[in-house]
Amino acid sequence: MINVLFFGQLRERLGQDSMTLEYKVDGQQLDTVKALRSYLQLRPGWHEWLEEGSVLVAVNQDMSAEDAAILDGAEVAFFPPVTGG
Amino acid sequence: MINVLFFGQLRERLGQDSMTLEYKVDGQQLDTVKALRSYLQLRPGWHEWLEEGSVLVAVNQDMSAEDAAILDGAEVAFFPPVTGG
Amino acid sequence: MKCMNRILVQSADFCLAHEYQLLRTDNPQDGAIVTFTGLVRDMAQDLPINGLYLEHYPAMTAKVLGNIVEQARTKWSIGGATLIHRIGHLTPAEQIVFVGVTSQHREAAYLANMFIMDYLKTQAPFWKKELSERGDKWVEPKVSDQIKSDHWE
Amino acid sequence: MKCMNRILVQSADFCLAHEYQLLRTDNPQDGAIVTFTGLVRDMAQDLPINGLYLEHYPAMTAKVLGNIVEQARTKWSIGGATLIHRIGHLTPAEQIVFVGVTSQHREAAYLANMFIMDYLKTQAPFWKKELSERGDKWVEPKVSDQIKSDHWE
Image 1: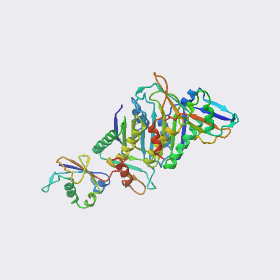
Image 2: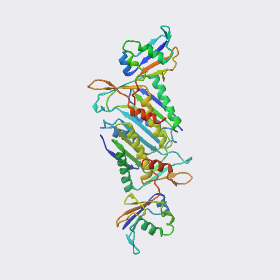
Image 3: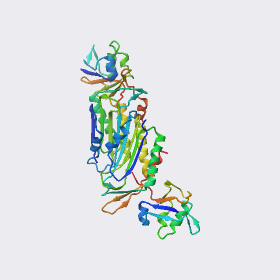
Image 4: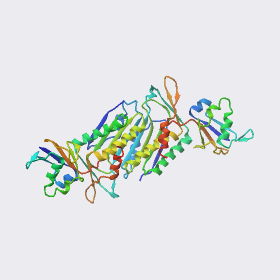
């Protein structure tokens, strides 16, 4: 299982703040950020909102790059550049 | 008249915090920092404490160099490097 | 030396006087306390706003804020360090963020405080929405913040 | 924008919360407030001290402190600026000096605050004596303070 979270404008755009995915879907493992992103981008209208470079990704609360590994049970968050402070 | 002030360690060393001098003494006008300093350095034991470089001088409350003019009625202060804050 | 971190994310307001007192107490070796407080401005891009809504990613925020303060400790010799960030709805003139740092001499407290704010701006998972008569608008990150943050590396 | 200077030299203690409140009041455009507070440390050159005695040159202090704050205003766009320096006898852990600066965005408030402290250290006519069991000792100026001050030129 992968727990996927969305924050800020992305959460609003996608209309949901979280979802739980099977680690292995359609015979494919969602074992990297790239694989998970590609899988999510298949949903209607989600492609542009999840594009690399426009959203950041954190795996288990650590900012992560495209090739970062995702293990079964991970928490993966997608979000826009941060604007706190 | 020149109103001369001493502060900090210098005040303690010289044993006085102020003095009033005639602008013209012994036929000489105390019309520059250099002239005033030299005049004061004639006093027994004062020479070393008033040496250029070891004390700062302010004429009418502005930090001043050796060649700064002193006008009759000025307030001239001698003091060690500052250590506030 | 007092090497305590106090890191809070809360919707409630904070009290500068209280935070200052905590930083000052039992800290006889530190001669410098620098505080930064961020307030909600009444304008954004020269247009009036009614307030802000601040969202965050709790599990990650805790981790990132702790990391930022620890990074500051590796760069400068600091004593107490406090970091408070508010979330939820805030109105103009309200306090958003507080950073307080103590150190023996002033330079470390100033620099560590700036560093914490600069990193917080680009690393901590907070998102800000401006609320106004013209509609609500998510804030865009500022390039200048990225530059300030990069400059410490 | 609120462009007010508040400059005080006094033997009485000051209250950070009060000063902060003054800086914050009627200042809706400024989103940043940076404060510096200097405290009397309990040590000097690794030896314990009982306190400090601070002397100044009143007529010149007023002039110099006003100048320093005005110089900061020419370098950065700042709102309120407060500078309080205490004189007389102070014991360890007491507050000596306060600098508070507001600005629209944080960088100006941080830099103006540092600048005011750096210049105050090398330009303002205060002299500090350390009081201890070993006898009283006038403080020597620090080379590092001169370097910090020069670096703004």
